[in-house]
Image (tube, rainbow, N blue to C red; front, top):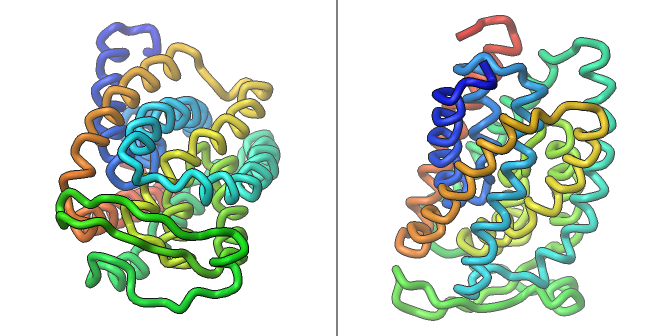
Length: 286
């Protein structure tokens, strides 16, 4: 199956679509690829996760460079949070090796679905606002320089912002890294949550900075996946090509849509894939 040209092309097309969605939402294509590969293409979730980790590096490389050029990504904040995510990623990847060696894959499906659905309530609450609500700066705002500005093409204005609660962002980022290593994704959902909800950064800053961060996190986890033989080169190559193309397209779309629109798309996809993954983990196949 993995050597079929038709299958390779199908992988590229699906990956390209996932890359578009991943770049728009800051999740990385892997969040969509793992459920689609495992639920609809019959690819074992261990190989789907391995290929998705590689694709996440491609997504980050493609999307992040464009966003940095547009000056929406906050590189300083992203680098500060990477310490926590890479540490968590190493712990998560070692945990998954234990799970697969003991044939406990159903845990991965259920945890994956729960992680996706856990984001829905927060996103719906924040969907009412185009920009973050007012928050008073705290001591972390000053010490860690959690501020910046960017020009929003849709709003036609320069948006100045500042972040708060750096400590809470770091805690969420550790778990984001852990989930990344555990599930083979960039864990952009949790990274966006950490910056958008915990640190009160604008949605576009959160998604673009997440895109910048997921590549580093995925590179850490994928090295351990490679050691354990969880990465199929043919599958990973097709996935990386497709996601890179999709991520490039997604970056062109993102700057022209509103924060609310991104959030609604983000929420709908989370609900759909989250429910399906949990059902698969409980034994209800598709």
